[in-house]
Picture 1 (cartoon, helix red, strand yellow):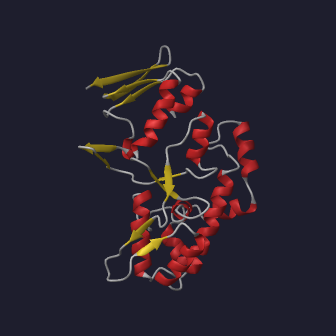
Picture 2 (cartoon, helix red, strand yellow):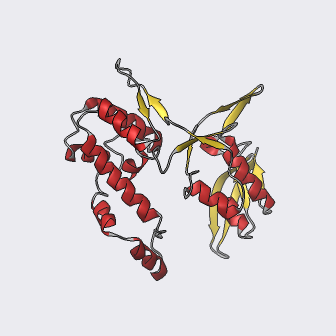
Picture 3 (cartoon, helix red, strand yellow):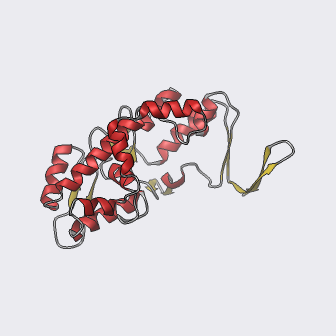
Length: 259
């Protein structure tokens, strides 16, 4: 956000409590080795992906990365063969049919939701609605399949399993719970169906998970460089401890602890 604002010529001060940028995609060093301490994979670097679009907009080169295939291996510790989450859709379909027989209806439903979500997103709807222009953009983004997905919005992934008669497959539920907790920090009973259906297929074509050369820090380093080149001001070791709006002039007062 700071890089995009600075790119528009807006004066920006970025306050970062840590000694480096990156947040949950941060790292630490031991000698000559760099270790990722949070996120180890990144999405959205494919053509049309959100990171690719941001770097293109900022007119900077994205960090060097390679697609992960398989994206990961999941060992359920039940003596069975680990599950390979393939980038290729056909290979992933064959893998899940082998690992979770009679679950294809569930995966097909997730696939339709996933497809509908991305088609809707790529038509650039504006949410939340604040004016008539926003409302008009939202209406333009709607299609018949969008309305179908909207009907599923109150449901969870667990509900989709029930609808597809897959809820008794405990091995499938264990796999889903492990995957969902990586992204939503919740299990299948609490992860919304629309969100869960998308993240369960983010590893497959036309999307994918990438490994950055060197470390995850390269993502924030690239954005920081653009930010600073556009005259943004970065203050590391500055922790914001209070925000208060001055009613007299509508300005925000920021209380900062400088480490």
